[in-house]
Image (cartoon, rainbow, N blue to C red):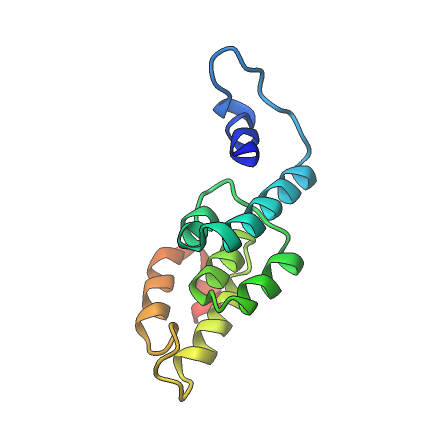
Length: 128
């Protein structure tokens, strides 16, 4: 709850009568990473939507092994995307999409197609 309250007070999101918190981007990354750690353990069903929020940036070096440990592969793709790591996301999708484990959550072409549709034309160099 505390970390959610901090996030709501960032910039223009501050509520009535509350001054926005002006913290450095590095501090916000640490706040987001701490919240991600808590969500993974307490509310794993909310991790993907948390990572897909436009203002969520986490420390990839900390978050990546946690997501792998818990088998959260869609969430790992979202983590890479939120950090601008589209190449890493596409490599992960390609690796597991073509893998022999048909039960893997990223198996097949559909997850890659969906990612590319969201990526848009600004990143043509990654695709072609």
